[in-house]
Each structure stands twice: as structure tokens, then as C-alpha cells.
Length: 241
Image 1 (cartoon, rainbow, N blue to C red):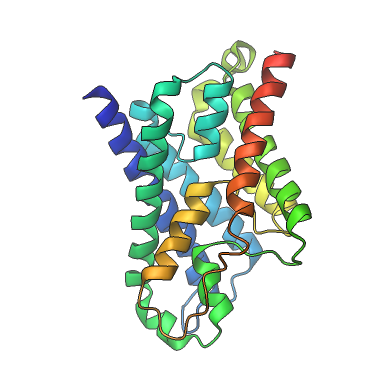
Image 2 (cartoon, rainbow, N blue to C red; image 1 turned 90 degrees about the horizontal axis):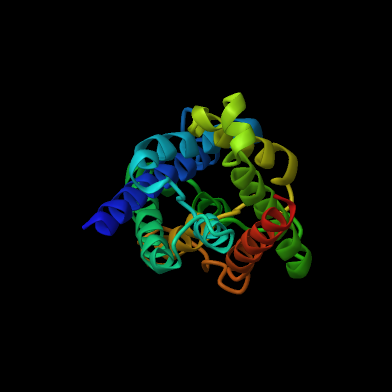
């Protein structure tokens, strides 16, 4: 029952993460939205605040991983039970799928008003600015390495003593914003398989007018890159700390 409760909060936290994260993309890119043209800064701020809300919801109960790469990295660093990795990832993926479906229902009229199929896909998942899959993989891996490594550093006794650990969601919020603003330009900084793969599935199954294919030939990059980055971050943390 305790594991079920943790997974439920992971699901709900990830649902809110995607509802607000994909929501800010929809708000700023879909035609006839009042937020149309808001730009990259609005998107990065929105994603950071989306993570904050998800962490506040799930943090006290599940630790608020909200990301398979974080779950895998924490387990590899010895800070999370391996037996709970798969249930957590399943919950995150379901939450991501439901969050993306909710965004579609919320912005359905605006999807209908938008002609560009790439824009519609971009609400759900990432595609690279310049397609070079192995470099895109490197970008995703490095950005996720930074995410997971800094999250692990937040957990150290030294940072808890100076107050970072006690702030909970706020350091992670600023970290997500920093990654988006500094490292998001190449791939759109998925840095989270549940943020990319689950909404990509939603794009594939939803009745979106005028949609394109769901970019499956690229989809391995925002899954494999973050998972590899998370594992390397765990290795670096263990070696350094």
C-alpha cells in the first residue's frame, strides 16, 4: 500500500508537470491563444514552475522524481530502492500521458485554429532545431547529467545545512529554468522520458486535425539520452562525494 501511494503521487505530480509544461507551450505557440508569441523565456519559466507544482504535490509522499532519468539516477547512486524503479516509471509515464491528453482537451479549439503540423507536435514532445541525432543525443545526455547531478548535490549534508535542501522545490525550479535557458536551444531539453515519450504517444492516438507523424524516428533520443545522462550523473556523484 505504501508503494501504491507513492506511485499515485508520482502519477499526479507528473500529470500536473505535463499539464502546465505542455500547457505553456500550447499557450505560446497555438494560434488565437492569448499567450501566442510569448517566446522561449515564457516557456522556460512555465516549465520551471510546472516542475515546482509537481514537486510540491508529490514531494512529501514519493520524493517527487517525476522523471524516469531521476528515478534511475537516484537508484544508481544508492539513494532509492531498485525494487521501486519500475513502478515509479510506470506511474510517471501514465501521468505524462494523461497530462498531455488534458492539454489537448483544454486547447482543442486552438489546435483546430493552427495550420502548422510541426507546431502541433511541438506542444506534446521535442524535436531538434538542427537534426543530428548523435549530437542531439549528446545534448540530451549532458543536460540530464546536469539535472540529476545537481539534484543529487542538493541532497548532500552540506547543502541541507546551508538551507538548500530545506527549500525543497525552489532549487529544482531554478535548475530547470537554467537548463532551459542555457541548454534548451538545440533539442528543446526533454531531459525526461515521461515528459517526451508519454505525450508523444498522446499525439499519436489523439484525433488532432491536420497532424503530422509523431516523429518516432527521433523519439529514441529524448529517451535514451536522459537515461544515459542520469546514470553517468549517479556515477560522477558517487565518485566525487
